[in-house]
Length: 271
Image (cartoon, rainbow, N blue to C red; front, side, top):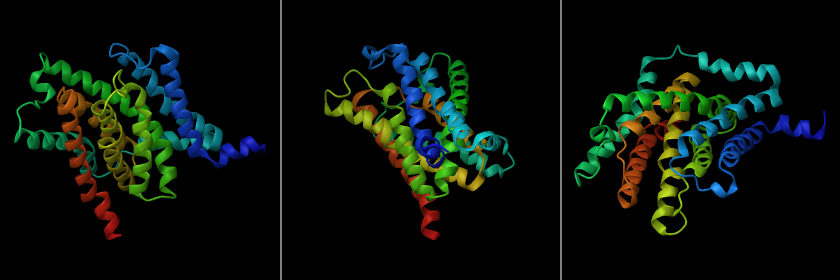
């Protein structure tokens, strides 16, 4: 075995994370060119599709390079694990909408300027269909990598919370290029918005996703949890900007971290 081959086989997680970033960010840079950053709102739909290939292709490549055909079979086998308790399907599908509804309820006590997106949409059915379809695509391609490859390997060494925290931070950082705006680094508020988008509520939600995987060992259930998150973001999250958006994101993060404390952290304390 060559030194390079030995390094690859003994560092599968490092190889996966590097590939996920290189493939996703590389696809964006190739699409827009170095001078095309930050990306415009009009470019986002196409670039997000290109970006989604990163986690899935990285998982396939990393599995093939580190464990060969056995790793490839293992990668896809978790998608077929559907025989889990109905309550875990409920947790997967309802966590995101219930959290967002709780946020909207709290904010409604202080202001009427946080309407759910669906309440202001011209065609509500089209909005729901579009975001469910988007969720299915995003959930499948991302979770083939994050949950199919990275999380099972991290759980062999770390607990639920640590695994969720590490993957959550990397997951947030992975979203950087599509959340970077022209004024992001020009002032405190734009930078705070970027930080809140990437490293507050996303990390908490990933901890919850790892917890669900830990209890079910089903990539399918976690994929549905991701589908629900994307659909909820498009259907319920208010369309906001500036200070109101920051408030919404921080309250959303607070609600999700409370859920973490009531679930994964509570279980950790008992253990």
